[in-house]
Length: 333
Image 1 (tube, one colour):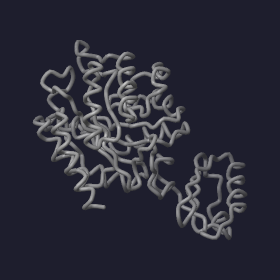
Image 2 (tube, rainbow, N blue to C red; image 1 turned 30 degrees about the horizontal axis):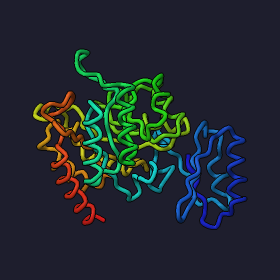
Image 3 (cartoon, one colour; image 1 turned 30 degrees about the vertical axis):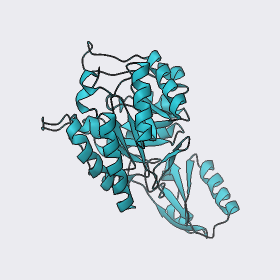
């Protein structure tokens, strides 16, 4: 249930109404926009009389929200959310590129890639330390040592880092990580979602390879229900009958999610296509479609990468893509 207040409502009147709602056992999410304030009510709203609330002088309208996700719902929060990560902002017109290797392999590798993608315009550095792999025999990442190398790259370049967390028990290791990535395989790991929801870190939530947009938003709701509203959604391709590409990039998710939620939307064309040759056109298309950011895998030696070399760009290729992306950004405003 949402209550939209009139523009002339005073702070005292708003606070009194919030206290009354809270006395009914409801939690109140306040979204203050440029022209209106929206009170989102979460809990058992059946006891609230719509007509009684709507009759108040300060209330413009009352609407029942039928969707099961509340905090992530644009009806609760009409203005786009801007997630701040240090000096970097994503959402609400702010665009950022996230780039780096699929996995951290050595100090020399991550430092070289970090320096080059930063020079090309990337705002955040990605790199896997803990790697979920389909085969138990594949490279599983450098784990804690990988995190230490990412932090060295952060110190050297000043770039905030994005890396995947797979287990809530690992949270102490991620204390200095700027953005916690929840991978596609863990999108519905609800205990992990609740755990990261108790942190104050930005969360990059990837869509599962067989999940609907509603299920993605419900997973975001798990995080936000714990108090953390710094959620960034990531479309990384879904599984279809097509086998030429690793997955099928759902670009329609950008405008569809824009209608449903206020959260920023990032596109990962690397995992979506699985082919380096397809990353550029999909990155450009995603930018034109209104994505708030891109997440692109970059490796200094893709042919010898320990993980996902086939979908990784070289730093030189990323430089070309980044330049074209920024030209599109100039056109679409």
